[in-house]
Length: 493
Ligand code: NAP
Image (cartoon, rainbow, N blue to C red):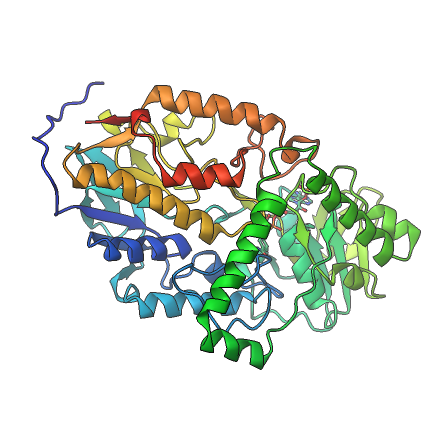
């Protein structure tokens, strides 16, 4: 196919229009930043409420395991966080509050799902679920990573007679009090659910396929005095955010690419000591001991899981699930685990990104087609032949145990710098060149080999070939790259 549109003459542009898809954290960020830059935008949200992952995940015990003052917009610090690691509902309220304060909430078009986007005649033509259309010069996919629940393929799951639901589709009308509850999974979600429900259930059977390393992280309340001080002296909040940012960068994100780093080894030792010191029964301790290195899977932060799983009403089931039956789950050793409620904390399909939306780039090429071998993005955001298109927290972004708000803010700096090329009239269309994409991807793949994620465990960080997909370089390099886009790597038309 050939590109049929003729490029109009280039001149400075003051009429650029942006289409933002999604009103979660990164959609709200985009709207705020575009308004600040004096740029016009429309923001579409398929649900009836903003908040993205924090709107959708309302499971018992939901907490963000990134410190709250770091999991905040840098420009909207919040003196009122209740704890070091705040509960999900508080984070949802924070985003709603920020969207109100920055007058973004009133711009969001709710109940409108973008079903298709095509780059035609130099602009993005958008189709929405209600049959309406829109047009923009730039398309920003702020559609999230952990968005599409993954359901386990367990035989007979429909036959189980009790309520069954995914952690991201929590059934608040189902009381767990006094019930025999089955929980499948031992990821960050299941660990939080375990600690949250153990006191109210009659019995909790945690079905563990793979053991997890757990960092002991206490979750202290901020006292009234501390919060008053944050309000009186916002500088102190800024200092705290900077400190946490630096320690997460140096003490974690910068070293993930080097599996042999002493810091990674120290994290492993801390997790191992936590297991040794916290779990008394040697048999249970061995069941909980992973056979891979700490931080290979996403590291779990919890100060109370080991306590919860040692309660008399908790049981850790390590036998494989064979099938579901009317009254519970049968494991391969023949045991029927009788249950009243079944919770699937089985994670998300992380290779979807903007899909199922159909995105067509130059000459009608489908993103699905470009991603036939799996999703990729130049510098974690852009795809060749998809001009003026950005994904926030998209493929190859730094996603592990870090503030995705910080990631999205840095990515947006890049977006604005690239947009400047169009704004100033240097070009009308910008996308990474194929050569730059290939170079970036080859370097990324090579670097992925030495990451801690590639040391012999299975996780959602891996692609279909088993190679880690997340940003494998240091986080400092990510900051640098976001701060200075290399124009030579882009195809400007
Ligand atoms: P996850 O980390 O993908 O964990 C899914 C769990 O389900 C794993 O233990 C997995 O076992 C198990 N599982 C999946 N299919 C199964 C099957 N068919 N049979 C038995 N077990 C099965 O999902 P998640 O816990 O929802 O967490 C996903 C991500 O969300 C996290 O990594 C994190 O990025 C984010 N999150 C963040 C927070 C936070 O506080 N910031 C909290 C929760 C979640 P295997 O390990 O064997 O695959």
